Length: 482
Image 1 (cartoon, one colour):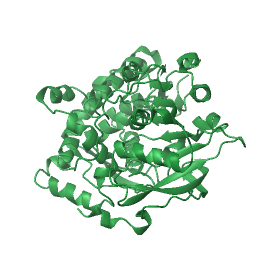
Image 2: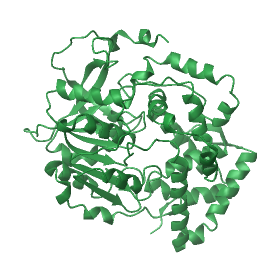
Image 3: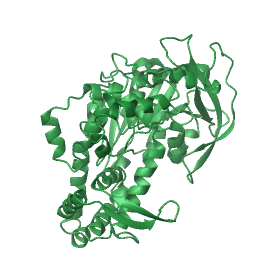
Image 4: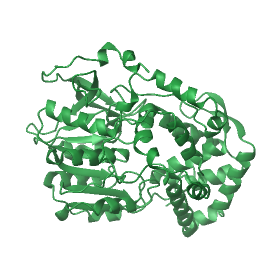
């Protein structure tokens, strides 16, 4: 594939541009209709292939949100988003308030990882439904080939191993000796690998919803999602108002999914994003995917008993509206070409789809379809650049703060403990009743700011995190119960 020939002239630069980057006023956007943040932005060119520093180059989108003090600390705070495939600029714009205390003393440095956002985003159109791929046994290789042919660059160079070298080149070009690094979800893999590669340039490390370096993404998604849903059912049963309002919730969900497997529902509803009347189909797979994604945050978890009960009673519109909002937002958020470039290089090659694993997955509400679909795509996706030590547990003495949500459906507190075990200067804080990502929760912004200021995890006062709690259940659509 001659994808490099598709790169626009604006994204291919010749080697040797060493002048100090020129910043201009700009806005960072969280998405359509979402918050924006003022910043100073530039583009910094890096090698497309770091093993060939004199070859083709691409541009990274880089933003600097100035500190509130006129005399900022010399080591900025940088934010790395998850996914894989989310743009750090969009993540930061959505959660800027969580880092406001840190911004008082430090610039915020935001770099859209290659393949995301405004750093040569790699989008890729493939069938979204596993059922569609099951029907495409013979055509799947061509579908993947067509997808790859539309990408603006060779996806083999859009992996974690290349991204950490990008970040360090940005640091060097901007004249910073060290960085304070924050990563969330998949971004914690990037953050850990940056600290592994450049420990002397990593002043502090915050790992929010951490993915251990030695754990492949994929095999545990369904079991962990089931564990989170089981916790929801148990909490509802132990909450008198929820138990009375929504009895036999688990059984009713099973019946709903079985009915939709037999016959997907068709209904007309107002588009939740645009307001016009549209016809929609609701499938069991829609419901499963939406349940998993709504399990990420305590506010949406609080809605699930009501949505499940309403749907089981035949009122499908509220749940179908959530499908549009949740899954539609995911498609806009993630650059799927970059996502596949990462997981098909770093995760799926370490997964064996044996009968015991598939049987275990089929015992969960998600089943084995998602993993099998991704594995089939990866069979035809080119493997990318992979450092030999990427999957080794991070070790060393970089001051590290690990944050976990008690009910996180994909990166549970067990993962935080696993990462903590190999670090000599680290602290692990768990938020009760919380889901995926703690940065904006309760007192956590204050705790993070203190940690970055002092770089002393051993002395950090994080007791207030234990005061976090789940959002009360919605008994109706007027709001959560007291």
